[in-house]
View 1 (cartoon, one colour):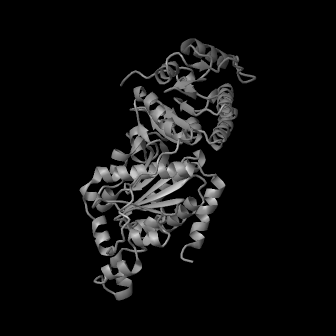
View 2 (cartoon, rainbow, N blue to C red):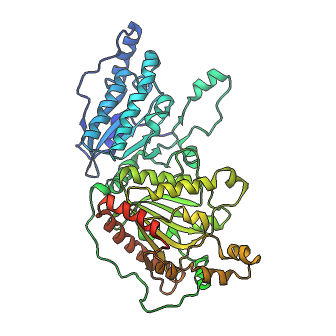
View 3 (cartoon, rainbow, N blue to C red):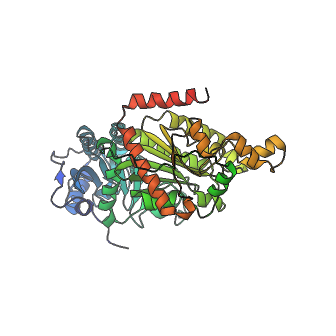
Length: 501
């Protein structure tokens, strides 16, 4: 196992050389009434670690951007948090909020300090309150979980990041394995309390070596601070289809959208976006392969992206309720930070199964709709291909709705609509045409604002097509960012109130 960095080593690796400014200028006042033995422990910890407390705070530039930093020093009583350490953390977080700085936390701690008892334990409350005030100010809070992070630290400010990543091979868990074994008389199961396992389970977003943290923080903040750094307008790209009158056949559109060679959200991110950082799961132990959540930019336009992954859904992993809970995490990120939200609709339909029903699929569709239609941040949805049923509906309502030329939207797949009306599937093409599910009809009906051309079909020109979508998104996002938020929100609500009237 590689040597673990102390707090100073982490800071030196992350911040631009020569830019770190310590905020730890006030002498530490230990808790009142401490014993002689504990006073000796504190003195020994200061000598061993070279710092005066278990936390180091300050600010420096990362990629040229000023960032506040709080980091635990594990050599000081196992990075434990007592009253003085908590007070230092709160002061640093509050200063970051007052100065409008994003915050990077690097915990490495055994939890709260046992020598100070319940008072230290309850210090997690005021640290959490300070973190939430920072988040409510619309400022990014990023967490890098170092080895080890357990106990009250992991169960409070260590788990409140907008984006949370972990050091490789780090012990990350609620109850330390040594304490567990002493309490219960047998070892904790192996392989559970690791960053790698928590990433697989959708608890944290990634496992990243210390040498990559500076690059990652730079990339993330370039996007998450984007709403505060308004991009300049870009010209409206020529991405619309030929304006000549068309008489599209709905079934041809549906057939094209189902082509396995058709590009999906992964191609959109790979060839059309930059500064992409995939996020993993709900942050609460759920992860669904049917949906992709990422921080990204299209050109200069920042966004949180929620994309239905056509390939994973078509290969036996239909989009379940956890996918929508993951989508709602993205909506919360967008709302808190004021970052535009992009949703990509490309689904043959939500999962139909016992697990989906018991997992609350209908309720998650309803809650996703509620979150999306009331979101205060700018929103753009893209019907990239298939748009079937409630799984599509959950991500459709937006300030601007775009569609690929071979995109479509329907309450059921045409085969299902035919089964309801005719009690067979033979009338699927007829039902699709009568329902007007294709992009051209959706545009006439005011459901879609703009169609992005396929020349002649996205499957035949996947890279060029997703670049057209990307250019359109950049233009539309920036236009929305420059509109007054209240007017934009009321226009969105009014749009759906008037639909069909």
